[in-house]
Image 1 (cartoon, rainbow, N blue to C red):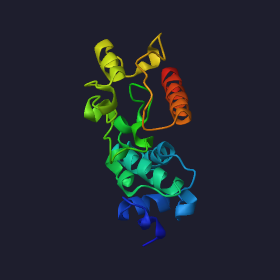
Image 2 (cartoon, rainbow, N blue to C red):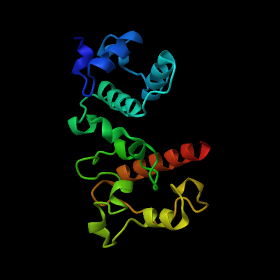
Image 3 (cartoon, helix red, strand yellow):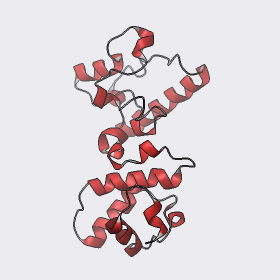
Image 4 (spheres, one colour):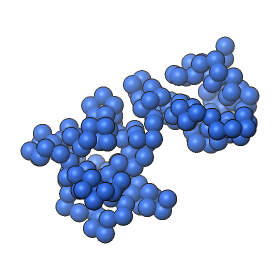
Length: 177
């Protein structure tokens, strides 16, 4: 058994596959992208491997590239597409400090986000707007960012500005795809 087995979710089969691809230590995986590991494994096997392996590799990527990984975030099922794809507002749920302990992701909770307690609303206005317009997210909206973007009262003005910058960049990147 190699040190790769110290990585959450890495069992005998994944350990064997990683070693066959030339990754023999945690250090050898640092900086590697999950999508690249998955593509490499599919190529090596000669067929498309079950997508759950990609989710596992995303959890591995998080674990090996995070200074103090949150044990809850290391579960492979929190790295499914619905948590890593750009949410309606531009956030990426898996990257949020509140995910998964406080928030399970806006698609999962259907826009009933924690901060509604401060606004008195029953649903995130951005989520509702995207749902009404049949948008996956705000990337194609001509009014971006609109008044539906509200400040989180639990964080500083600076952090709110940085979060908005990141969300808009994520939406810009999503639009290019």
